[in-house]
Image (cartoon, rainbow, N blue to C red; front, side, top):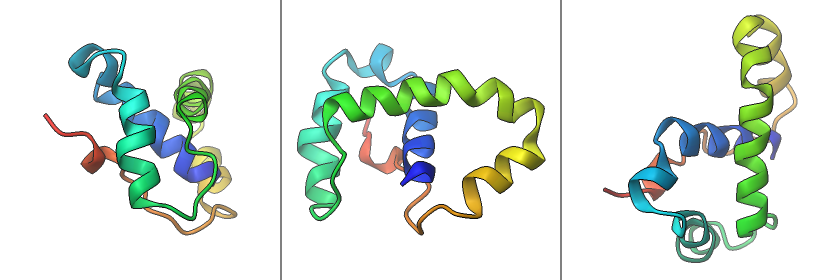
Length: 91
């Protein structure tokens, strides 16, 4: 789940989701896209998505400076889930 939150936060930040589609994009991702695509997964609320974005923004610099550690930390113990959630965001 940690890897999923990291990927979700990364996609939101790198796609500039809020500036491109407005402040409601996180609610839309939660209610309309992620919960429907992953109905058995808990932790996909709007608040959790905001925390995923903050988590990525907080630790991105650390892992960018130490990519070997970041890769090991994120991939070794993370559950197998989709790494790219950008397909949930449409233009």
